[in-house]
Amino acid sequence: MEGDSVKLIGFWGSPVVLRVKWALALKGIEYQYVEEDLSNKSDMLLNYNPVYKKVPVLVHQGKPLAESLLILEYIDETWKQNPLLPRSPYERAQARFWSKFVDDKCAPTVIAAFSKGGEEQQKAAEEARENLKKLEVGLEGKQFFGGDEIGFADIAIGWLPYWIGIVEEIVGMNLIDAESMPKLNSWFHAFLDIPIIKECMPPRDKLLNHIKAFLQVLTSSSSP
Image (cartoon, rainbow, N blue to C red; front, side):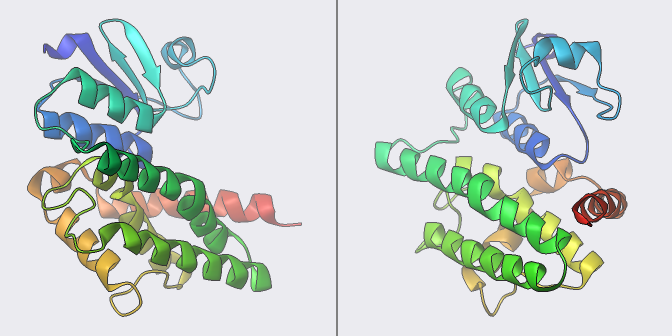
């Protein structure tokens, strides 16, 4: 497929945009990337995603699609090479389940653990660790969520420990470690060691500064 028929509107520091970049890379799809200024959203973004007004937006043959997990499914259904979702209906459902679990349970509690203070922070951190521990169930007996090779859930979840590691460094709190979550820790290192995954990852120093600024906004907005 020609790159000019596939366009991705994104932001370099967005983990959900990274999901789409990974999927396109694994499929070998050429595309035009458009970097969005989230502090001054473009008419292009607002026209293509008038409902949520967020990135990512995938535009294929002039038709826009928003929401990263839906975009991943669209990519997998449109380009059949290197399938992301497994063939088994049960395993496909499991991949969707764990991907949604991260968005609905893990990500919000992790953000709360880093943006709250005092007792609220400790409570949020405990809840975040519980959710991350539950996530290990999806790796039972497998190297990756997709089995022997990475798949849909790995792409959807793979950003999480990388972002957590950076925030742990900033705030001095540990949520993931090899002792308490050995399967999750091993999976992440194996996932990040894949060359095509590394190539799409944003620079760590740049991301660290971006997350520092983001956390300042979160903590100031949550202050009384």
